[in-house]
Length: 114
Length: 113
Image 1 (tube, chains in turn red, orange):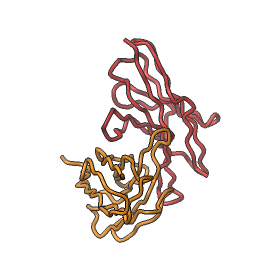
Image 2 (tube, chains in turn blue, cyan; image 1 turned 45 degrees about the vertical axis):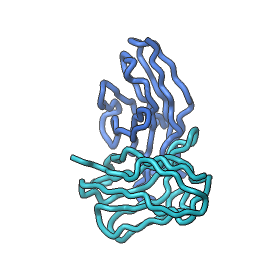
Image 3 (tube, one colour; image 1 turned 90 degrees about the vertical axis):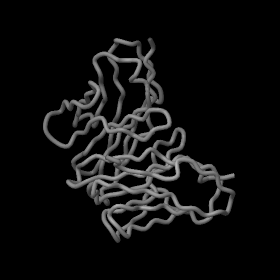
């Protein structure tokens, strides 16, 4: 079965420090992986995706993610956190084998401390 | 450039009432879906559609109906509202190729008393 795990409900980081939000996945075929961000009372916004190619994927707002097939991980990273990065982050995997469904993690709340 | 539009944004219902959450997209996306978001549970798929005339159940379909008569519209119907359906509902669409990302609406907050 396809699934996504975000092991940390909450991540706190000081402004200017690097940040990492963790994600691991389980799929039966090739993984199509995504990161989304949600600000309060808003819909989810797409940050980046991995389909194929380079393991390091760059996305919006200076975020990047590293795909690691052996560890089945797709961690979200940013070299220098901003207070405005404080939000809820979701990792997702798309399963092309069962109706193209997306499976989401439970989300990680990121707080960047000034 | 409207994207995915959901109405209403807020709704309060009494137990047993029915209602329809509307979703429309103007991007000619074939794939559309409805999710509900509850604290600590992430997003759970209710129903989805891979094209006009085709719908299928997701993880939590009970108590909800959908139809897809056009590419643009994908309404979600609550047949007899229950307090357990109090949630934030999101509509999302995705283009071909099938590896594409989801585009989300702004959400509809539903409270069932």
